[in-house]
Every structure is written in structure tokens, then in C-alpha cells.
Picture 1 (cartoon, one colour):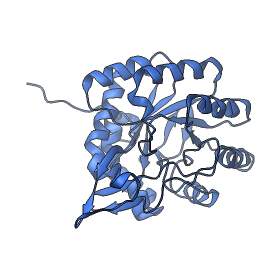
Picture 2 (cartoon, rainbow, N blue to C red):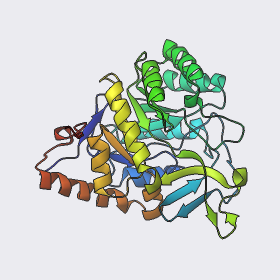
Picture 3 (cartoon, rainbow, N blue to C red):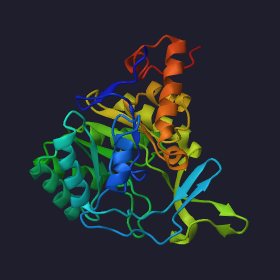
Picture 4 (cartoon, one colour):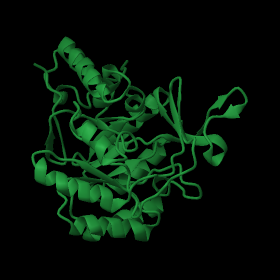
Length: 312
């Protein structure tokens, strides 16, 4: 029997699939749904220090090959998700879950992470450096100097397992520069990628979402080639101790297979989960297992990172 078990930061997961932050994770009820599905774990909605209403609606729209959104970080606030996870540790102590967070300023980021550091939370923390949909706020991870400064300050005090959510990069030099920064720090994982920022989708003569005059993050099938490129570029460049979570364009088991082939240790479902619901985890797991069985792979380790190139 083939296995889709995996590990991240030395922690074991029964399945390599989880939700992407922003989908099926706003409330405790949604998180419970992912927890009780075929997914190996869940990640919470990216939490800010205080609750946020987010951008005006309509702010999400399914489109033929994916989605466009400008959510603006609506969430219930750090304490809502942290307290939920602390309670969960008492009732489901064998499993590990992921807390996603972001500060609206460097100072707020440190306040959030110090709160987590001082708590009894034993899971993984994901620092989102890549939200493209807050008006007036740039994506931190495109500012390499700021990214390095934040990580340097964070690791002065933060000793729990930490990963970062990244936007897509599009230039080989940027892969090199970003990896050189990340390799300086004891990061456990990088998550590649968040949506491609500031796309535009039009129906008839009108944009389909309200914030930012229709500009929003693009997800779904549109972004798979970009996501795969980012997964593999960082797999090639990062220290082996920094693992990759692959996100973007996972509609089928074949898509997940390609993310793992490029080097991903875990795979997240975003737009597909939003469109299809929780059954997507079971379906895509079964499809991946069928591919593995057909190819004679018993575990993810048999093919992770073993992307083949064309030689003369």
C-alpha cells in the first residue's frame, strides 16, 4: 500500500495535504472540518493581532481557471486562533497544526510572535510575508532588506518551529537573493506560493471584485507553473533543513505529484478546496496514490525532489 505520510520540522503527518491559509479556516467550525477530513493537518486563517473585517465585498470570485481575491486579511484575531489551538492540544495531543500570523507593522509582528513564544503552543507557526491584498501595504518578502531585518530580530527571541509564506518570485537573481537570506536563519520551512498579486479579471465590461478597483490575487490553475518554479528553485537553493510547502494550482493528484517532484514536503489546497469543499482532500489523495502505485513508488521520499532535466 502506498503512503502519503510526510514530516515537516521533524513532526509526522498522516497525509501530505492541508488547506491553504485563507480557505476553510476562518472559524473554529471550518478548522474542525479540515481536521476531520482526509487532510493531514490544517493551517489557520492568517491572524493579525486584533480582529479585522477585511476589504469590502465582493472580494472573492471563482473564475474558469481559478480565482481572484482581495480579501484584506479578514480574521478573528490572534487570541481566537491561538486559544483554539491550545484547547485542541488538550483533546488531540497526537496531531500537529499550523498557526498562520502576520503583523500590520514590524512591531505588531514581534508582539504576535512573542505572544506565541510565551504560550504553550506546540505546533508550527507560519509568518505570512506575502499578503498582496491590503491597500497601502506592500508585500514584505519583495523587500529583501526588510525581510532580513525582520527575521534577524525574530530569531533573537523565537525558538519554536517557524516557517514563512512567500509570494511568487519571477527572476533567478531574486531566487538567489532570497535563498541567501533564508539560509542565514533556522527556518523550518518556506511556503511557495501565495497568490500572484494584482491580477485583473473582467466579465463583460466590469471587474468582478470591489476592492482596489478589481485588482486581486490570482489563484488556481493559472499559477501552477509559477508555483512549481518557486518550489523547485528554493528546493535547489535552500539548506536541506529548510523544507518546502507547495501551494498553487493543485486541482488533481497529478498536480500534487508535480509539487512533490519539485521538492515539496507538504501540499496545500486553496482555490480547489474553496470550489469543491472538503472532499477534495480525499479525491486528490486517492489520485496521488494511484499515480504512485502506477510508477512503483511506495512513499513520497521515493520521488521527492527528483525532477528530471533534459540532457543532450
